Length: 640
Image (tube, rainbow, N blue to C red; front, top):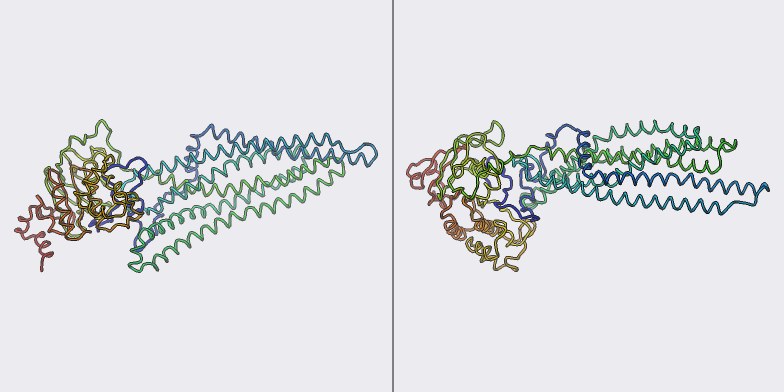
């Protein structure tokens, strides 16, 4: 266990990942703090979210769409053209009906020879061409819009992934990993679905509404007036339903993120859940979150589902009135039979764009809620930017001298973990940091690696303040071996090679031999080519520790950090690793955090910490002779 007063976020590897390389399993599984108990993120995880700003979210989403202006214009033009050709269809079909009706009536009256089938054929051919052109334009706009939607979502996922790397460790101390994953999966998928369906649907619906209105006016203004009267009623209904359902769509996205966090956390820790009989509590927490999600989703979908039935009722009432008025006008010869047929089709289609807009508004509501969560995440405060390249310290010229000058730090304001820490470490020295759990030992290492910035004081490496290094350059100086191993789903050779990505197979095997890992690797079915599973559970905990030590050996750092590096191996293996580490630490500055004091007797300097301060320092012999806290701690381990 880490001895910090707060849980440690997963530590990044000492070397940067290769392009396209999978993330370490610890980072993917999100071992940062996400809630107590046997699973489930903190219940008030969402309480810290900013006030809802849908207009701002829409503006930012339009900014992403603005990168594809030409494609969007093509989509709109083709969508309008497709709709216009489709709208002309009923009017032209009405002409065919009128021609047929007039021919039949003339034949019955004895004033003609019957319908002009040649004229009807020409009209139908023109109608077929219009519908074919409409279908072609619709295909083109759908094809282009699919590309735009995928490009926008690609950009969002890329920006979210980059943001994940730029957020401070403190962010992951308070936010569930599952919620972050929900934003890059569920929320982005909601936006993609909306762009694919709703954007063109709105364009075609508005065009249809205007086009149908124009065609209806060209037939009869009185019947059109009856149809238009239904619009304000429909608009009021849509506004009322949208206003009531918006908050439920937002709650649905938030609860979905919570449930994802619970599932991710419980699955990642299913062994612990079962070992401590936590299934009932985990199920109870999941049921509570799932009930909240069910309630929000039910209310959102119920309210949005009311739109179509209500719109159909309003539309049918208007349709009945228009049929009566149209029949009266036809009897008086004010409109033709074909025009009545066309108007009936337009009237039936007149409500369809309104229904489509109302349906699209549901999707847009969910999209805006998802977009707000995404852009809220992208707006989170990032780590302090690195110094400019021209001002940064060159790590190649740095030696392993380390100095802590009155360092003060706390994870939360007003609650210091380190109060006044000062120490001077010469190049090549082996420094041991000991103390009770919660004394702040691992926190010192986190500050040294600049996972967090100090609140006061300074940390100097090679005489230079670590804030004058680029973070990548600073961390390239260190090699870390933690108690909490981090391995990812790849071969054993690739896991070791993570310490230095350009290492050859021979160098990987040499590092494994130094770390006493070569023997057990050679006994595995595929040797160094054996692929570790998602949880790296197909090797033992001690073997995982040996692999991380081999990775540090391969990295060949100037400063070595060992945080309880041998805690998961047996005594015999510990002795072998200790010998290998002694060879590795020659000429390197080394920080060793240990609870087994027998492993740090040969340290050049031992720092004894209590309550965030150094209460004693000296060699093993000096501290035993002083009969202070170190002597008491040492004797307690060897009391028998």
